[in-house]
Structures are given as C-alpha cells and as structure tokens.
Length: 84
Image 1 (tube, helix red, strand yellow):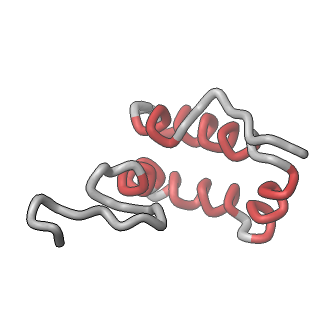
Image 2 (cartoon, rainbow, N blue to C red):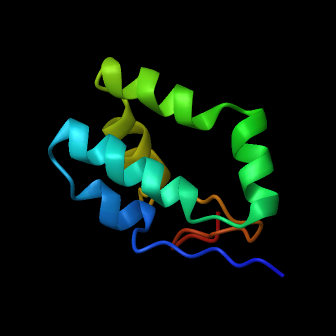
C-alpha cells in the first residue's frame, strides 16, 4: 500500500511568501501523495491548475482558504459556543 509522504503540509506552505517557491513546494507536496492519489491529481490536472492559479496570484489565497481554522472540511460538524 502506498502512503502519502511530503515534507510539506498545506499549513506549512501557507507561510511561503515567494510565489515561485510556493508553486515549486506545492508541486512537491502533490508529488508526495500515493499512486492512487496521483491518478486523481492527474485526472483533475491539478499541477497545471496550480500553475495557472500562481500566474494570477491566487495559489497562496486558495491555500490560505483551505487552511483557515474557521472552515470545516471534515465530515464532523463543528459547533459554535451557542451550539449552532
């Protein structure tokens, strides 16, 4: 079974301020995924999409949104202090 191995996480990538290094590190992050995930990355053409987002200064913004603590991307609901 393949495992996902990368020296980067989305949160660590968030700290990169140089757009070219961000793209390079993000592509390395994608390369760290298992063979099965690599198939999905290829089918969605994520590397090319990341390059296009970086060209228009949006890659960092997307990474920031995906790592925002206020956004719940899990299957478990998060409740506020009022239980909503």
